[in-house]
Amino acid sequence: MNTTAPDDPRAVLREVQLGKIRRIVRAALDSNAFYQTKLSEASVIAPPRSLAEFVEKVPTTSKAELVTDRESQPPYGSNLTYLPETYTRFCQTSGSRGEPLPWLDTNESWASMLDCWETVFRAAGVTPSYDRVFFAFSFGPFLGFWTAYEAAARMGCLTYPGGGMSGAARLACMETNAATVLCCTPTYALRLGSELTADNYPDLNVQRIIVAGEPGGSIPATRARISELWRGAEVFDHHGMTEVGPVSFPERDALAVIETHYFAEILDLDSGKEVEIGETGELLLTTLERDGCPLLRYRTGDLVKKEYFEHPEFGITLSLKGGILGRIDDMVIVRGVNIYPAAIESIIRAFAEAGEYQVRQASKNEMAELEVVVELDPKGDAEQIARELRSAFGLRIPVIAVPLGTLPSFEFKSDRWIVTE
Image 1 (spheres, rainbow, N blue to C red):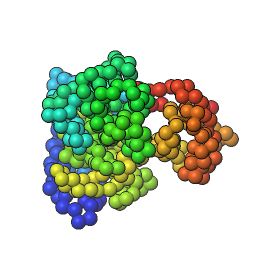
Image 2: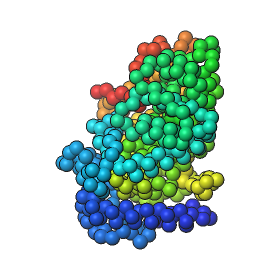
Image 3: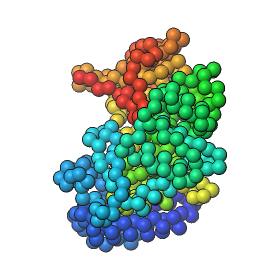
Image 4: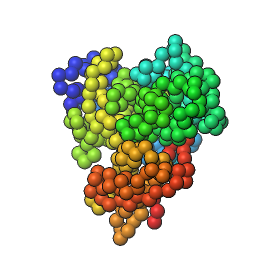
C-alpha cells in the first residue's frame, strides 16, 4: 500500500499514527470483546508493526456489525475497551439510516473530539476574543451538537444554545446578542436565511456559517446560495459522524482529514485497494484518540476523491476534494447513468428562484425513473431546470413546479429523496 503522496515527507505523521494504532489494538486485544473476536478470527494476535501490516491483516468494520453487536448485547454492545463506570458520555446516531445506535465515551475520548472541533473552528477563522457562536439545533442526543458547543465554549467563545426556538426567535437572539458565527445544517441555513429580507434584522451580523450533517456544504451552488441569503456570510463545511467523531475541517473546495486523530484510507469500490491521487473511492477511518469505543478500518459508506494539500500547521494533509461526493448506497442507476443526490442538489441550488425540492423515485418496468418537484417563485422556470438536468445527466427528468412553502422543510437532516412503488 502506498501511504504517502509523491515527494511527500509524511514519515513523522505515519509514525505517530502507527504508534496510536498499536496502542489501540493492544488495548482492544486485552479488553475489548468486540474486537477480540474480530481480531482473533483474522489471526491478529499482536499490534501491527507497520501501517501496511495493519491494512493487510486487520479486517474492516461495518455498521451492520455494530448494529448486530448492539442487538445481541443491548444496549451498548461489546465494543467497550474500559469498565462501564469509566464512561461519562452518552450519545446516539441520528437514525437517518436505520435505528439510532447508542455510543459511549470516556472523558478522555470526549476531550479528543473537542480538540477536533477546535481545529474546525480555527480553520473557519473563529477567534475567542471576537466571535460569538450561535447553535441553531434542537439539542438532543446527537453527537455533533454537543461536541461543537462544548469545544466553542472551551476555546473561549461566548456560546448561545438555540434549541426550542422558532426561526424568528433565533434570528432575534442572534441580532440582540451580536452573534457572529452560526452552526447548523445546510438545509436549515437555507430555511432560516429565507426569512431574512433587506429590511428585517438590520443589526444581524453573522459573518461565518459552519455547516455539517449533509453534503450540501461542499456543493458550491449551495454554499453560494446560503451566503447570498445571509448577506455575504462566509460558509464553511465540516463532516463527521457519531461513530467516529468530527473528521474534517474546511479547506477551499475540499474537506481536510484531521490525520492526528484519524487514519484514513480511500479504497476502490471494485478492487478494495487504495486509490491513486485524483481517484474516488470509499472512505475508511480508524479512530486514533477516541479509544473508549474504538473503530478499526470503519467503512463509512462515503464516496470521496483523494487529494493532498499543504497546511501550515499539519503539513501535507489528505484532502477530500469536493467534500463528501455522495453515499455509496444512495447512488441510483437511471437508464445506465449513475446519479447521486448531491449532483441533483448542485443543479437546483444554482437557481435563486428555487426553494425546497423533492426527488421522487419510482420503478417502471423494473427500471428506476425520477421526477423532481421543486418550489419556485413566480419568476422561476421549471423547464430551464429540466434542461440543466438533461444536460448534466443525458436524461429527461421531469420537473414539476409548486408554490413556495408547499414542501416539507427541515431543521436537522433533510429527507428529500422519496422512493415510491
